[in-house]
Image (cartoon, rainbow, N blue to C red; front, side, top):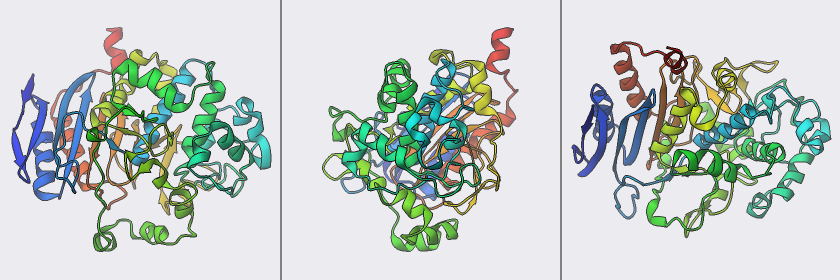
Length: 418
């Protein structure tokens, strides 16, 4: 039974709205406390539990400059949390028999084999193990907007080291490689953004875009308020990653800050770039959409025609490269598998079978098949903790405390069988 919250609480003089189902009130309390104690500006959290939307909350301010309120349909860029939604498209391709995760990329894309890339498998590139984390040719917005031109750059791209030996976060390049791979295997040769819209967003009726159309007005968007320099210097964690980011020659700066850099999907006049696909970082949408999509992946996937074999592969443990999970960009151990992040000692979320993706500043979406959870959190104030924003952690801690106090529900497959 849902508990309507309406204007159920006031945080920083702005109403928190939405609903929670009975028993999930601790998540609502944590959401309120984010405003009162954790400096939340505006945001939203949504949770699906075995197909039921049990949490759907939003509130605060969507634009710090104008003071405009976060509304039910407010959308925001989620940076690298986009990676999880992009990876869903390849999972659908796998379920349809178009794509084998263990096959060489060059089987589907012969030109990719140039410059020592002939042995790279789909699994390796999706796990950031291909050594292709930063382009070595100039890539600007015009290049990104031209799939054929971008494909040529990627085909000529030379790995930084022998593929399969080391892991390095493909901060932006991952999505471009995913997009070209999908374009090659899709019988209709759609771009990843169009495929996502056709095969995921439209069937599920989601407000999420990897290719943001012209017609959506600026009034639908939240803007991200960045932390000040002092807050970054004092509060950013881990510190080593901050120092790497300040070094323009570092791997992480090359991966995220330049050529083309994350600014490529921003637009001073229109908030976010339109009709431009950056599948590793430029997704714009709602927490509600993320939670619903992950909720489908956390159960039986029937709404999207997913096979159990695909879902089992997504839930399976990550496979490390030869030198282990230490990431040469992120300067710590992180685990990736099939386009998603997996839980690890340094980045905890959900259970062992969970898969998802966080975004710079605090956004997170993930599926937890063992608990039947689809989760989404977004914000208008960027945080400074890379390994789990305190606002998001508080929400997830409250959620899993609720789940531990409730009788375990059977998995979707078990319920269907019974």
